[in-house]
Image (cartoon, rainbow, N blue to C red; front, side):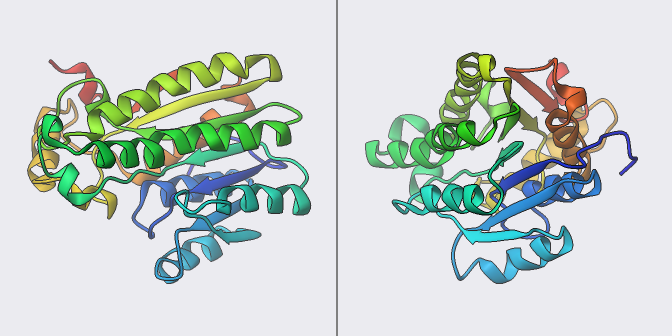
Length: 257
């Protein structure tokens, strides 16, 4: 990554790395390249072997389990950060989940329980992280989350995740307003489709990628490295004038009717 973004002396938390191909992994690499010290989480013992190489590659000094569905784990994570670092400069929330049966059916047919679960894991967990991070951001900071075009327009087979991501983007705006007086910024990065483990749950995702590629002005999809560069800029002091934004990292796909 060209050294246009400076994060030396800053400490950040990355939540949501599934493996080396995930968007969060691309962001972590960009943060580290820009000089940040990182904390990183893994979902559980089954996921740990896939995430640990990423943590080692970026030199993460805190590596901890975090399943936002497990009561107390998120609090434990931030208490560890407070003990070991005493401060925090930025957070990347790249967490989303929906039960497969609810995701694979139309939005009007998803269950109440499934919708609530998707909303809790994919949206409300961002609010919980913001609440826990804010007291550690004594010199201001940046809260980032990952969204998708399906929050704004209907995308075939995206189903209940469309309303959930729309709620996440609205939450970003309200968080940005709530925490502005503390110098804390918030953004959603609306990433173009990337072939990740999370995306595998979306029906006919390969067809979606082909359709997006065909309609994107440059005729190519965005990479996790490119998304990472945007995340690093937003987390840096250079991004200080920006807050409350949905930043499109999709090679211009969202501009095409």
